[in-house]
Length: 282
Image (cartoon, rainbow, N blue to C red; front, side, top):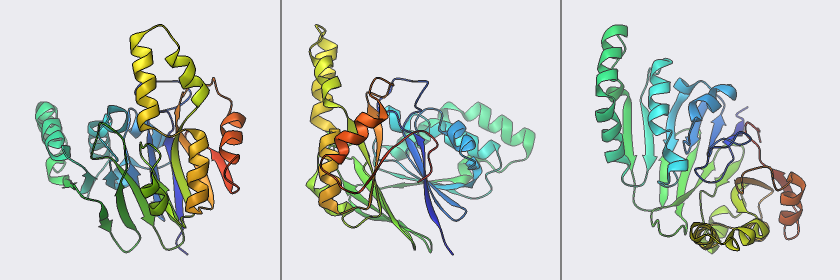
């Protein structure tokens, strides 16, 4: 019987590197097939820690081009290749994914040529394909899963997406970075699992009160283009999902206990609430 699983590889929100949470990434596993969503810093190490061979990833889906979600892209390509990639790895995402890929190959040309020559491996460029899309809808389909993208509000980025994985036994929606979105509610309707980003309003209010221009500006940005944990509970309830998984935590440190995140989400959602952590399997 086919089994669809989700492993949270990194649950931190934002580009600051933390010891308790890795950068954003998650992998959907349908039997032995691995579909990676986002590739933050250290994603290859997190795949290995989760027991997923980097060379088994054949499809990567990037929600949007903020560094915390894509800075591990080159590392993923290299990590999959040196660990035995023997088929095409396709990267799916919005522009400028194609030019980013070209830049990676240009930057690493010397190393890639040297390794191909000294190991006899197929050139990495022959094993990477790019599927750049600019519109929502079905972006990938194979016998195991259908992957659909929905545009979400994450200003000032216009090309930001949520992804829905519809497999034979369950449906999983990953919000990406987004402000509260009625479109996302409709997109997630009836899903078994919704993985949604969250911020904790009191922590953002404290940040905004700091007598520092950068702190108040960042606080305004977070409120404008992310979703509070209270709103996430509303979204999950409106979408009628069975399980809500909190991830992409802001703040991503240990200052907000797990039970606080869960309690705030449960105020408006009666289903199962899971406070995400790195390497958690759902």
